[in-house]
Image (cartoon, rainbow, N blue to C red):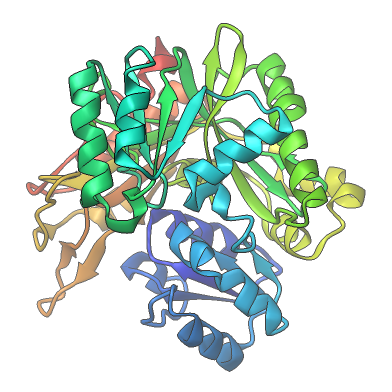
Length: 429
């Protein structure tokens, strides 16, 4: 098989790395890719939201399967355009991807299908939003309706802070993405990420993972796209996973299919494990980043057959064999520590030199996934983004995996970067 991956981050590097290990795969192409993905196969410099360029590339290289990594091309309709050209695509339609591209759309569907989630209000009028704040108690969860690179969620304590945030959002902080907002009740509990690979009918549940959204140790500071992750997450036991399946995933998949927008690809279910059971924090229409890095590293088997079946149908009949091929029952504990550029998430400093990535990669059971790197004219690796590297490791236990990941971090010489030193703290506690 020839496989094309759209995207350039750590998630896409991890997918390319895993897919390239499959005996079914001859070539892995990436667009636009990154220096890490370039070592796996050819990279093509294009914008994955440019549907014309994406279709032209697909017609040129004729891949057997196209995997759409990030949310922006899904929201732009890349999967629909490519399917219309006859390609098999792993990724939901533009309509189904609104589960991520519109928080309000997702909340309305959950309400319709009876899926447990926080109480909410949805607003496109500033005055109505401010009036609503006076009717609810804090803390207040304020979300930009559209895509805001993982930064469009703010939690504040006081009504005054909430009013300021709402005004900031609705007067253009994230442009069109925050012209409409959702205000939610604050849920208490522990968060976890559940990833479900689906063809719209059947479902494969990957081990639960846990992300670390806040920028600082001890979960302080602003929200980020994710500073690290690990799997499996012990907060999701067999009972919680069964409730996620019966109360959340099955109603969503059957409801969306009945409403004429079957969901194909991976459904990211962000949950809060509350005293009354799991409730949905958010849905995403793609693998999480950095959870994907930990999941790909921990899966011992071949993920390609499952990716293909989710794209073409027939998952219900082949579920058991696909899970066996992936090695789901033998998942190895894994952890990812994100190294970010100083100033992230506000104004990351770009252009700083990074050394020692090859040394970290050479450590047994350690893999460094590139998220925001480039090679300059001096052939030096430099930082070009906020989250720059995802140092990932596996181990016999979760603690061993975390320790090994930090061993990898220690091998990297990058004065312009920083990382959290407490990844996995909840599980280790």
